[in-house]
Amino acid sequence: MRRANAVQVFLQNYNNDYGYDLVVADESATVQDYLDALNQAIEEYSFTRGRNKILSCRGCDLCCAERAPLTAIDLYNINDYLKVCDESLQKTLDRIGYIMVNGPAVDITLRRGEDERCIFLGRKNGLCTIYSARPLVCQTFICCPSSTKAARLREIIVNYGEDELVRQWLWQAVELGYPPGFHEGFRPKINLKDWKPNGFSAKRNYREVKIKEISPPNLWKQLYKQG
Ligand code: SF4
Ligand code: SF4
Image 1 (tube, rainbow, N blue to C red):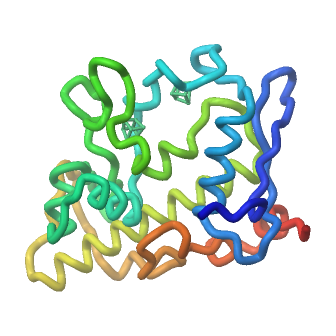
Image 2: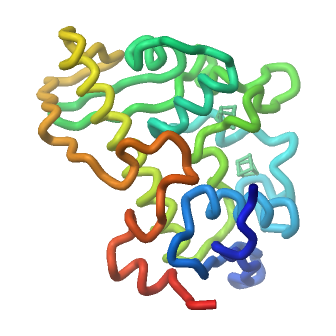
């Protein structure tokens, strides 16, 4: 159920382009509260879409051809939606993800087809075929202006979520005793010890991830406005 007002998203005028700012009004606000508030704002407000100069994403699929980093929770949500169970993380990532390794760095993104567009994009109608389970990065990207703190919060959530996915992928390979399989690599030098548990660890859905726990103190100070 949606917790009203834990995160509040406001329409903002940025030199006659309409974007958004946000505040967190509840110390226990979660990433799901953030997603709910942003999804509601997308329905209610006419943000200026900078890429195609229309007021809605409907009928546009430009960002479905771009890098879309995944979180561990995204994979749970997609597998639940597709009713896939008992599959190793490696198998899931081979099916719907793309793992790129560069030295010690790892990037795990949504798999794209030969036409460079996401495998979940309906090719005939340009609509997302897993809309209600689409990844966090898809739910939170709007090609409109936003405040620095809103952009920073999104960046932190996406980065921590992806880091935890990388940690789980490497951990599972160690536990099951196979080398982690990636799809593209350049001088790979990956090590589980480089990925420490964070606010996403052991969490199965976004309602369990607290914004305060993953925000650096200076960002939290800007975000939190007592109601
Ligand atoms: S956010 Fe993506 S889908 Fe929506 S208008 Fe912008 S480019 Fe198109
Ligand atoms: S999951 Fe859906 S919204 Fe996200 S990139 Fe793929 S088609 Fe687009």
